[in-house]
Length: 138
Image (cartoon, rainbow, N blue to C red; front, side, top):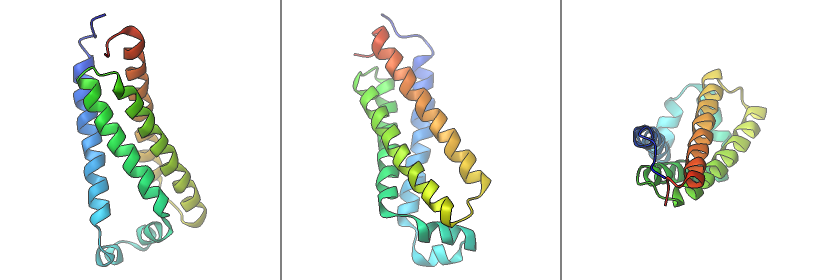
């Protein structure tokens, strides 16, 4: 079956969205102790409370989402598995955020943004899954 006309524009927007996440992740990895010290105290507390495995979850989420989006644009079946990997990474990240929230008062913006990220990630997985069932992806 032929893929719908909206699939490529959605995939392109998904690539851009995930590239922003990947860029933010890389910047986060490059932040120095001096830069952390210059942040507001609440943000410093988040960095101090963040477990190392959260970084692994974030990497899985953003790399899986970015590559899954590229696969979706190419109409590749493997994009479904990459979106699943991205969701697994997102769950790891969210578990860490819940644990951090027990120690640190998270800003509402963090919670809202993480919710938006989750909604987009789930939607992309649903689109890829639908594409695999309908034969749009090969």
